[in-house]
Length: 311
Image 1 (cartoon, rainbow, N blue to C red):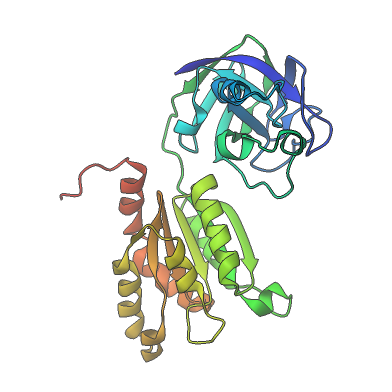
Image 2: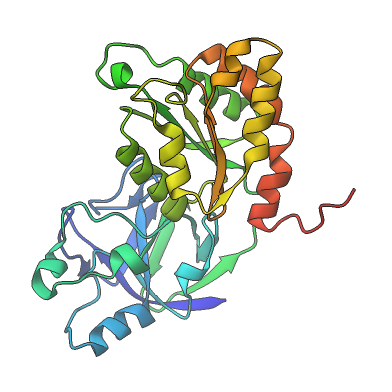
């Protein structure tokens, strides 16, 4: 799949339409020189397929390239069909797709003008792996990745006291460190209160936009009235994976009878495996001992890398 760069757009402030400058310098691990969205994060460069803008124009909206806040308009590549982790080469510049679609917290200028914006639905985002210059007319190609994309993971801690700053989070960092030691790329790690709606929001955002292979939650799996992690997890699930949670409970019962009180669940949304862990750092490590060797096969199936489950 190849495409042609139709526009290169930048802006000096976020939340406004970008201007088609036709040519720009892309800086490794930063983004576009002089663009407001540059920085040390995963959404350094935004891209939209040209046909999506054409469809919007055909509805009667007279919009210029850059109106949706996109940096690159590309003809010939349907970015929404590509998986996160796809490598995009344009001359010396190498981009890696990191997110598909986005949340729209405060509607942008184009939304206020015409009542709609396609960036949250059709836009994708990337980070700059190698820098260089891109200009209109350049050719973009999908580059073959040498080696396997590392497993992508996110860690969410559920704790009212922790979110208020009354307790130090030890479980989340311990989980993240173990994942990194096992070769995972931890793309997000954060703490929220024991709010099921907030957890559902973040699970949907991560699974649908950032699309990690694995999400591990810690906390909120017990009997307290505020422990709603399993309910929130089940509410966003597309498929249940009871065996993982059952295996954790079975192994934990050999350590403590309190393991039977765990209400943790394990599920799938899209191509992401979500596993609830307890709030104790020690119990989290014991739980991870149960599944860490087994889930790469499961995640490979979800990625489509594994086709045969037979021995």
